[in-house]
Image 1: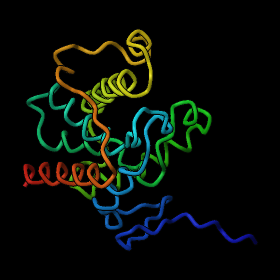
Image 2: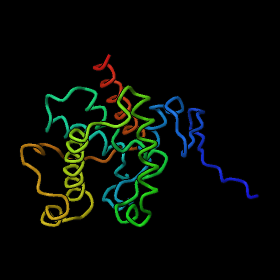
Image 3: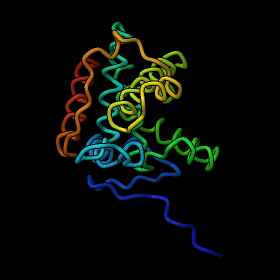
Length: 198
C-alpha cells in the first residue's frame, strides 16, 4: 500500500499546518504576513522593482472596504484584511488556473479560511452580505492594480473589473515596497484591528 503524500507544511514559527485538516492553533499572524509578503499578485507580471504582493493587496482591500463601509465593525474590517490569507500556503492562483483545478481548490481555500477566521475570533464563515462587500473592495483593488501596475488600459479594467466610484479611489496611488516593509504593514494593521476588537 502506497504511503500517503505529506499534506502539511512547516512554518517559520515552527507550527506544522496540515492543509487537509488545518486547525486554528497552528496558525500565526507572523506566518501569514511573511508568506503573503512574498506571494506575487498577477503572477508577478507587474511593473516595478518589487513584486506587488498579496500582503500589499490585502492592506489595500481593507482600506477600500473601510471607505465603502465606514460604519462596518472592526471584525469585518479584519475579515477584509484576511480575505486572501490562505494564499500564504497555497499561493495566489489566477482565476483561469482556479477554474481549471475546479472544486478541490475552493474546498482547500474554505478549510484554511475557516481555521484562520476562528484563530482570530471571527466566525468560520462570514455573512454573505459582508462577503459580497469585501468582494466589491477586492474588485476595486484589482482595477487599481490593473491600471497602475499590470499594464491594463482603463477601458480594459472597466470591462473586467467594473468602473469604480471616483470618490472611493480618490488618492489611492499604489506603491511597491520591499517584502520586509509590507510584512510589517500587514502585521501592524492586523494588530490595530485586534485592538479595536478587545
